[in-house]
Image 1 (tube, one colour):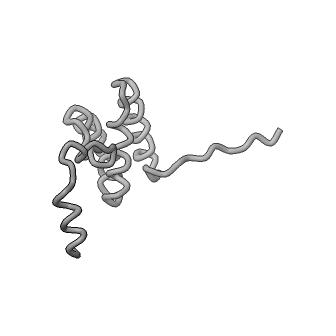
Image 2 (tube, rainbow, N blue to C red):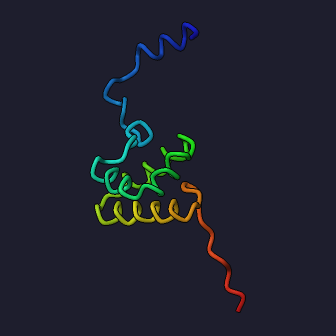
Image 3 (cartoon, rainbow, N blue to C red):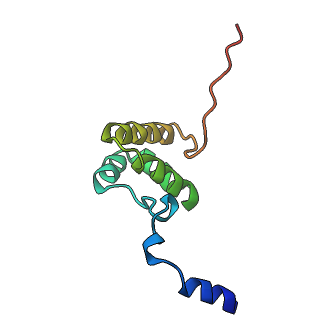
Length: 99
């Protein structure tokens, strides 16, 4: 780093470190949810083959929900997609109604 960068780093406010969402993102599934996921061997194997960045995104999406019911709904959604062999971490599109 350049001296100016080192100086700015030394002057940082420790109270403002670790307060942003990306700094505190859940990095793994809770042990309870991982156990549920692993019970479906097919889904778990498919999920494990995804790249780390996709798994990180999906885990954050599941664990960042405030209500447990939402977390469980999201977990079951991911398990269903994995069983079907579909990608996870990708926005789904619904077919348009051609009325």
